[in-house]
Amino acid sequence: MIMRTQAKALLAFGLLQTSAVIVQTKGDETSTYGIDMSFPSTGTTIVSTNYPWLPHNVDPENNPTPSEYGGMPIQPLGDRMTAYQNYMQGCRDYWNEILEEESENERFELCDRFEIERIHHNIDQPTSMMNFTDLGFKKIKAPKDLYDALLQFWKDNRDSESDEEWAKGNIFVNYWENPSKMIDVKDAELIGGGPSLRDQITNVTSKIISEWTGQTLVSSSVYGIRVYKEGAILVPHVDRLPLISSAIINVDQDVDEEWPLEVIGHDGIARNVTMEPGDMILYESHSVMHSKYCTKYCLRP
Image (tube, rainbow, N blue to C red; front, side):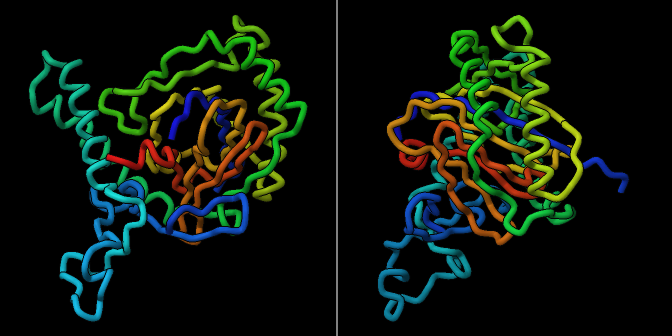
């Protein structure tokens, strides 16, 4: 895939209380895959290597399934294991160079510690959460007034983007080869930015998500606009508490192919949800794993 720019506003809310092949959203063609196919989500750094062209899949009557593939789903997305290994090595190499004065073990274990924590979080948190919708996500159109305000803010400030900061060893995006950019809607020094825009975003989206979940919400964060560049990857994860329900608004994009949001619904099926400028995705970010890849560029090792 060639993706030049995709700008998105990210919003998150907490509850106010005391206590596969790709599935597209456009057209009628649908097929599915599950967890740990595009990128490790709950497995111990493993994605399926059971490729369709292997003999036991091409001619199962004459080729018994080898033990290492027993129970492993067929991998429709190509060599995702090599892509994953290259991704992790990119993180290790980056921090090895940045932190050359620290001990070798400290440098090389940073990314792997973050990765183990991500996997455990994906396993432990969703199973302990209460869900409020049947599927866990929904695509709608953003209210026109809100979208127009965000688009104007983007047009006025798109040259003011800055590198997004990540903790040492963080593996959620591939900033080591493709830094994600941010334009802060809360920044009063930017044209149209500051409390007024923040409050408009919060008030409008809070009402929408409250109606969708049937819950009273309190705002946790208004995050963005985040700007993704060509080759960016966001790995599968669930948001940390107190983030419960979230929304993404596609503000603008310059792409040659769709660059969808992959979500793992409450039914365990991965769906790639495409977005156009003005689209808004609501999702239960505390229990729905979500990620972003390219359709071709990022899916080849």
